[in-house]
Image (cartoon, rainbow, N blue to C red; front, side, top):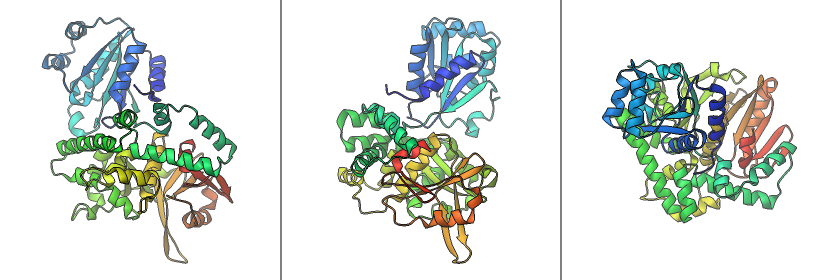
Length: 442
């Protein structure tokens, strides 16, 4: 099992909650929720019951239809799962709980009873059809689990030193040197290509074969699309998902819904976008009409960009038209020699990093009134009572016009400007030029 940062959050919940809340671990499928929760159960409890509702028997499911006698429920769980439960020393896990809504509803009574701890895991949990007939328990504490971040990826390949060193350099605002920057960037592009899905990372470590890694990622993408078809038999969700790389490649100011779904407008498919967001497979960046500290209250729900939760999956989806993503493509991407603009690939990884670090995604477009030219800030971070604009470049920069014009227009609102790019760390006037592998420190 790979080392994951969420384990510390599980420990914190166990210590602080002391049985007063259940924990709901949400995330896209295949990010490793079940694995980490079961490992936590093994290490931190005297015993545990693990119920996977994807394969649970009818007799297990029926136990949650009547909660009038919890003694009977716990007795049956112990008998059917062949596990002894110990008061305040045992954990009961409801895996893929969205497949048994009554089990999720039962959390209220189970937590009130207080004998055991409870963790739920699930995907697509917020979809209406999974919760419309139940009472959502207020006793749930939610945390989100994402694909492995860059530091977790480095841990997996045996590197526990790079990130602490980079953090020290970032905090001291010291450069890493041109030669080291090239190596660090190549290592980071490897992460971008393999991605953070544990199965893909494991395949890379075992085989060192990009084709086999790509097959794993294609399987995951197919799994997501199967889920989309179950939720939306019209196929619209799948079309919106598949078009994400092409939409970003257009470098347009928003996701152009009409170009994907003929005759549809963004304001007419807000529910579909909400479903994609709830699936945790997609990250949504909303346009902020008034870039400032309170961007959430000024976001335009009908003007958005979509990213994938994992940039490794994004790299595979970019070349979905081929039977498999040929190793030569991976090789050229790894060495930054593929003859195409990869700005949208770098935008996706920055969106992923910012989201994992707890930031809601916003961007801003505006017109210069004198030149009538349109400008775009790729990402906006809210810090204190100000904003930090980010512009993302896929290579060495020559200009950063959007940042310059934005800074002049909103000078009183800006805390710090960032240019995220592929060169070494440096300060250029009021702009911090940040290598992309340091984005996690923002």
